[in-house]
Length: 396
Image (cartoon, rainbow, N blue to C red; front, side, top):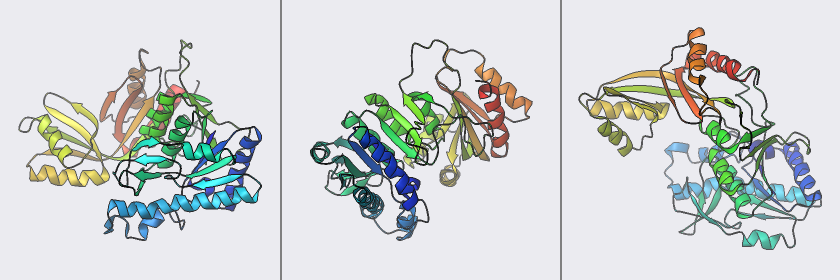
């Protein structure tokens, strides 16, 4: 079994002792356990990734990406040693490994490396004498032989890759919430827990703003058919949280909508194609490393969205190219996600009726076979997500 503990799950002695209970319970049930840990705590904690970056002036640093990886990989290594010490103190046969020790081999894209292979021989050998192997998440060894980190959400990815490589019974992702919910409980007043959900639904919700698990980890687990569970470190060892697995295709009347996700801080651009064709607009943005989201291409114009940081760059680019754009700042994207959306008539009609009833202007829409996206003004977000949640999920 693979168990991943995020920063808040190892942030202090009390949290680490709760994590210890989950590891000890799994060992008592006969499992060999790979524990993947994130850096201790979140922003502000001494060894959290953001705190380490602040030691070298953050985005203003003179360090190369390779040198930055030397720094930020330390957070997970410290966490690994600290948690291994706790396991040993409490009588568990455990050993600690860096990501490189655990067999992670990556390309040379420092700060956002892709894992090329996971060589599990070291872990399997350790299990001949140990019950628990604690692995530093978020990192591996590059082709050039240096430490490389996997980007945000990297510890989730590490856990999923180990689960796949070791053919684990399952991968448990421990966080500070008890599982997936039908909406962000900080905004959606009537959000409910989901006991079972498919890989596709969770990946889409994660891509669209739900931050419980990284979408890449879900995709890896899906490819390997390894079940994931989202659990709370603070719950009892018998509380199983949300199971993420293959969709049960024997269920003919599958729920149409699973959850509502959202993203904030977007800017909508509308650019006329009369003087500047669509392909040239998108080539200009791509050449400057701007990744557009939520795109509509119409005969007379293109409409797309960028986040706040990219917006400033795009406005300068368009101005230099003498391209006029209509801009709406402070937008939010609301995503209605569900594996049963495809082939279910009336979903879009209900979305439009709900938003019109609540006097919310729809700035843009698009859809896929599992997701319908709606762009609204950020000031309308709370009303929009609660109204849509009530429409689709209140009585499910």
